[in-house]
Image 1 (tube, helix red, strand yellow):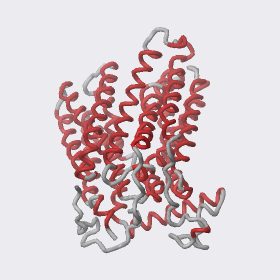
Image 2 (image 1 turned 120 degrees about the vertical axis):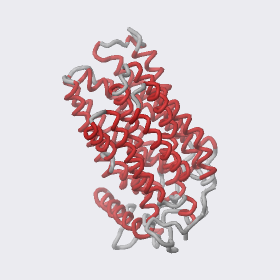
Image 3 (image 1 turned 60 degrees about the horizontal axis):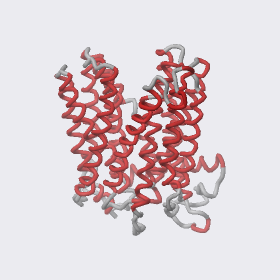
Image 4 (image 1 turned 90 degrees about the vertical axis):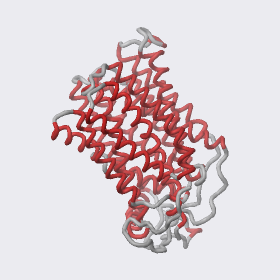
Amino acid sequence: MEPSDTSASPHGGSTPPAVNLTAASEPAPAPATRSTIVAWALWDWGSAAFNAVIITFVFTPYLTSKVAGDHDTGTAALGFVTALAGLLVAVIAPAAGVRADAKANHHRAVTSFTMIVVALMGTLFFVKDSPAYFVPGLVILCIAQVVFEIAQVSYNGMLPHISTPANAGTVSNVAWAMGYLGGLALLFIALFTLIQPEVGLFGATDEGGLRFRLVAVLAAMWFLIFSLPLMFSKRTSARPAPGDAGPSEAGSGDASPTHPTSRELRGFAAWKADYARVIRRLVELFKVERSTFVFFVASAIFRDGLATIFAMAGVIAAGAYKFSGSEVIYLGIAANVVAGVGCLIAGKFDDWLGPKAVIVTGLICLIAGCVPILVSENKTVFWVTAMWLCLFVGPVQASSRSFLSRITAPERAGENFGLYATTGRAVSFLGPALFALCVTIFGFQRAGGLGIMIVLALGLALMLMVPAARSIRTRA
């Protein structure tokens, strides 16, 4: 188990006996049933339809290569729209998390936002392979990305409700693995029924981009079907967050005539109150819960490094190692399988040794794994190295989620996971920028791996300053 050493402090010296407002101060509710946990994990399996099929492998490439009049122009426009979506998520996520906490119902928020995303995915069927449909397609994708990310805030916020400190690592890692494997399962179904056959199901051909439009419908149905168990599962709620109690619960948190609660307000005034609460929360974290604050920064940085690994793996494979198009696809399939297996293995270690141990070990192995890319042009070496990296990417991400879950009171889950999303977006430029800078300085594509190593090392250095989750949780 994680050590309970309370002497470690990111700002030096012994840690003052400050009240930890992130960790739960009251007995946790009874653990969720196995069926509730399975229903929660199935959402990860289903949501891969959006990430893997719509965003990464099928529909977005169709939009930029078939719908856009010019591939380069389409790719550039997609980049700008993706950046805009990220900015909107960074702005909206914290307040959305606060709102979910105030209503004490992440379950309802996940259900509502999931239905919106499914509907938007379905409308992609009407995006034909003509430049006239390019802008509408981009707009739909932008809105869908924002809503999906907000749904994830409440989805992640459910983790403290359905798990305990004893099993949070397993629950988080298994669900993350199901996301990888669910995306692969749907990709195979789409490939063999709609994409590869000359005439696929329902007469799917290239005419009018029909086969890709039907894939969007298939993805929407997949997401909906595997979200239904969570939608109809027993509601997992928490008491309202401190400061969000209604009039009948006055006296808790920071509710006062000076700081009215979001439950007492409506419309713009409610959102304004939510943002004011987010700002107060950030100040509170920095002053009182410095360890949690440092964790937010550390995880944002190393998560950006992990995202850069996945984003640039195919680029390096095709450019530096001369992978063919089919080889890149095989690499992507193998990468997702290995990442999923890594999560399944890491879950038990997370519960046994603690999430910090998994995160730190994973980051060290990832940094070491980037070295062969810098020094070798051999394709076999790259294959082995890529699989090594993928073995740790998923566990670090999933254990980062379980770390935050362990130090978060259920009634503050949306607030903290909203900040988790925002901090991640705030530094999302770092990995790609250092990757490009290293390629420019050293003059060869594989040098971008050094940029990834720098980002991961910075995240690791900050993570080493963060006490174990058990230590943060038990401080009082």
